[in-house]
Length: 152
Image (cartoon, rainbow, N blue to C red):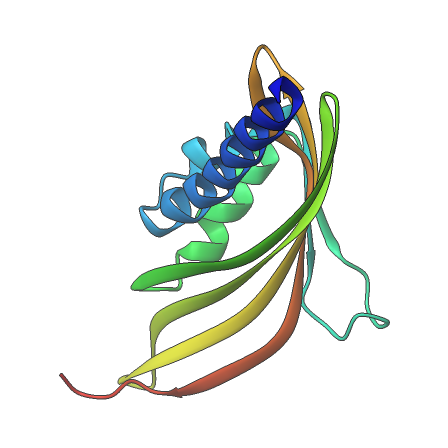
């Protein structure tokens, strides 16, 4: 029973890490996002078809924060809706996959637009100092939808 409770606590802590990542991105707290990574953590972004193109790799908290500042600057607002999560936990290490619909509001040629990205995050996680961190977070784009934003 103790192992089951420990496993459940780890799963909740990792889910909170993932949800905090989404919240911090939406709040433009780029330093807060970067702090969720281990000091040498990596953010690996695959925006093209999975077999084509090289990923964009950011290593370390400073590079991750800078990349987020630059990447988010073009959007007026974002909302990340975190979906399902599957995890494998082995002591102080874990790996898993989390789905997310990432909504981005931006302007193009005077028109407000909505870009929705279906994202699949593949995570390698590690526990340090009693907390879970991303050792590597791979963002993989499944599909996208870009359209005019409906009037309120």
